[in-house]
Image: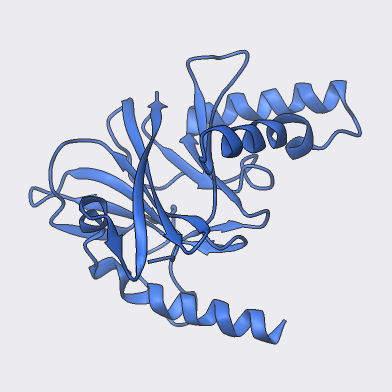
Length: 228
């Protein structure tokens, strides 16, 4: 456990000044930090309300609050940047793009009540992954996803969410497409989707950042898995 905390502490310290980084540059190159980079288009995320939720879908999607900033409702492309070191591939960055405009800065994506700034006492805003999996979706989709789970547990009182709903699909996609992501469409609301993904090094806290243009509008949302 001490070894784990030591390694995790190094990763958190590495991420502290990340708000000053240009995340977009990683999507324009094939190599960085001694690792091979590869872009994968995951699909479009439907945002009917414009408030985005990021969390562990197996443990936190039932009550996680959305980020405080709202984006225009619509469908937006999601790209995952994978980093390969030797034979190991990990998700490094997720990019949700709202407009074709270069951000002039990145700001922490904060929840209601948070300042969006790093502090030594509270660290940086981010979502916790306790099962090595994260997700993003609209707050409106979140409500329908929870109803989907209620129906599932009603029919399967002893069921396991991951094993019953997602494990086979994740494994099949990883074998066939070498993807570490899953674009899950709600069966009862097929126009609503939740994009799920493996989180970099597994369990931990992962920060999200708004890409902001010079005119103050939001261009993108980036989730950093602290791999680069």
